[in-house]
Each structure stands twice: as structure tokens, then as C-alpha cells.
Image (tube, rainbow, N blue to C red):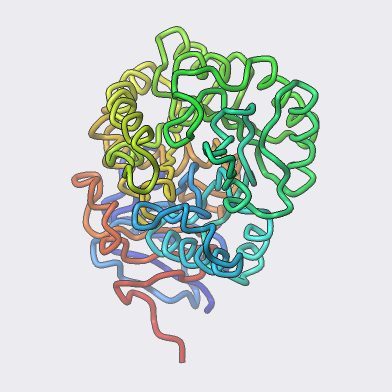
Length: 420
């Protein structure tokens, strides 16, 4: 196909600028080659004209915090120990596919997938969002990455690849070595747990996890080994403080921030990934434990009350959902409506968070995140006007067309011509 000229569309370009009411986008091969008002369009040559029927075209959306190795609310993660590794792999392929088809064209997997999935997607062997992978999550013994049960059984080996080393580090030197091992195995970033967690069995969310000096050591190794970013699972105040003082690039969850930590995050350009979608459904005690359920009831309310104060303070927000832990894969874009509901963002700000700002967190702003000439043609067509109904983006039936690198991944509305 020589190219695609999308017209009769509302264009929300991800920059935060006012939407173009009669906009158009020209795609040639895998790139955007022009964006603007339809009346000012250049000669489109042999490009195929595509009438978007007064719907809205946005940049491809990001999910910066997902777990494709986990089944989501419709499954039980402990069932993974009963099935062969091949089955677990095939289940991941379906989760990647449905996530892409529902509008997420780029994602960070923050525990579970190895670099092979990223490579397979990049080479077109399987369908899925463009991936960045952390492989696993580092914490101290009895911290958030230690899932050892009272029986002594540790299910962590079923939640990531067999080549991935133990996530447990209890000293600065161990943390430095483990970070280098993960980078050597293809990690795009390193995830640390500087607080306890909701689903982990041996700690509480307000307990201090990785100490500041250990977080800082991981940050230093990542800086020196290819400039890799560090993401910190941090829920309670002490864990968020250790993450910020340690110099991480993003705070994941960040429920118990105070005004001073918010100021530091603004000054040091540290992102917040609030994962609100994970907070709207408390953990099922039958699939986790009664203790995990009780923690979720308490801390999910804290999360919903805190995110608006962080947004109002100017903390940069990127979109992440924790899909796989409790949210089902493919429901990711419900997060945008929750950022408006709990965070006080406007619909435009929520779209910018899920596109431009998430691309900045992932370090890919030069090629993705906005609809601009020269960038990769990752595009999503949303039914109607999401600036008037942001919740509509979270319904997969309203994701009418998904392009990734100029190629159609999903065309629910039948916009594109059928190949001969």
C-alpha cells in the first residue's frame, strides 16, 4: 500500500494542543508524514483515502506498568504452578494480542517477561505492544519480591523465565551485581521494591523495603550500564522517600506521598505511575489471601484520595494499570477515566499522560507519543469524542482502529480496504 490518508476526523495529537475538528493524518510506510487541517493537506499521491466518519484519531496509547505473565482478575496466579511452561507462554501471547487490539501500542512489563517477547514483537513473530521489560523485581528477603509461603514454597520461579536470577538482594553489593545481571539478560529497566506491598505475603505496604543506599546503588549501576532507568514499587511513605532519595526515574503507585516528596519529584522530574485501575477492585481473598484482601481495602482508598494532590502539585503522571495482577488484560484504557475521576485531570490531560508523557518516561519521545511528522505511525481511532466522554476509551468496542508502525493491528470498524 502506497500510503494512507485519514480524513474526516477529530485529531487529538497528544501534545495537549486543542483538537483539530476537521483534521487529517497522512501515513507513508511506517511513518506519519503529515498532520493538520484537512483543507491544508498536501498532495497525497497514491495514498489510499480513509474516511474516519467523524471519529477521533489519537496517538497509540501506553501502559507503563503491566504484568503479562499474570492472568488478571479472571484467573488465579497460583494456577500457574500446575501447568507446563509452554502453556504459560501461549497464555501470554493472547494477553499481548488483546492488549494491542484494545489500543495499547506500547507497554512496560514490570515483572514476568524476558527479552525474547520484546524481540519477537519487534521482528513481527507475534502480536503485541512495543515492549520494554524489567524481567523481575528486586527486593530484600521478606520484601515485596519474596513470595515465600509459610510452607516454604516460593512461587516466584513460575512468574518469570527460568534464566532470570533470584530477585532477592540484601546488601548494596548484591544489588549492584543483580542489576548488572539483569541488564546483561536484556532488561530495558530495573524495578526495585522500596516498600512492602498489597499482594506480597511477608510485609505491609507501609513497611520500608529496599533502603535508600541500596536503591541508589541500583540507580548508579543502571546509569553506568547503558543509562537504564529504575522504577520503584513504592506505596507507603518510607518506601516512597527511599525511592525519591535514591534517584529513581518513576515511582509506581506512590500512594502515601507528602507535599515535600511531591516537590522533590517535580524538581527532579520523577514520574508518578499511579495504577488506579488496580485500586477499583479489591483483591479476591480466595485467589490471594485474606491478609492481601484486607490490605487492598485500606490502601486502595488511600491511593484514590492521594493522586489528585500529586497531580495538582505538578508531578508528571504516566499511565500504568498493574494489568495482570487484578485488572484483566485489555481493560488498560479504563485508567484514563480514573485519572479524570480521582486525579482531577481533564480528558485532554489524561490522553497526554497516556501518550506524550508516557513516551517520555519510556525514553521514546523522539519516535512515539504524539502525532507529528516523522514519528512512527502508531495510531488509535476512538469512537466519537473522548474529550467529551473519556470513559469511552476504556470500552474496547470504541477502539475502532489500531495501527502499529503503519500496519493495521485491529480494524473493528472496517475502515481500511480489504487486500485483494
